[in-house]
Image: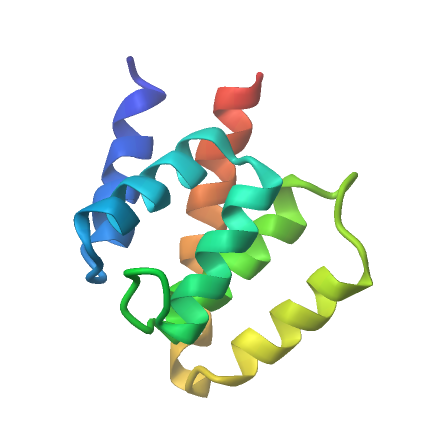
Length: 114
C-alpha cells in the first residue's frame, strides 16, 4: 500500500495536465505499468496534443526521460533523439521540474517492478 500511494499521487498530478477521460486512463496505465510502448505513446500524444491529450511539453519531456530511465534494455537511438527534441521545447526554467517529475515517476515504476 505504501508504494501505491506515491504512484497514485503521480498519476493524479500528470493526469491533471488536462486530457479526455480516455487519455487520462492511458496516462495512469502507462505510469502504473511503466510499459515501454505505452510510455512512448503517451509522451508522443502529450508532445503533439493528439489522441485526446492536451499539448504539454513539460510532461512530454518528463515522460521521455522516464522511458530512458526505466526501460534501458529496450531504448534505442530514437528514444534519445525524442528526449532531446521534446525537452528542447520546454523553458530552461522548467528543466528542473521536468527532471524531478521524471525521477519521481521512475522511482515509482521501479518500486512496482521489484
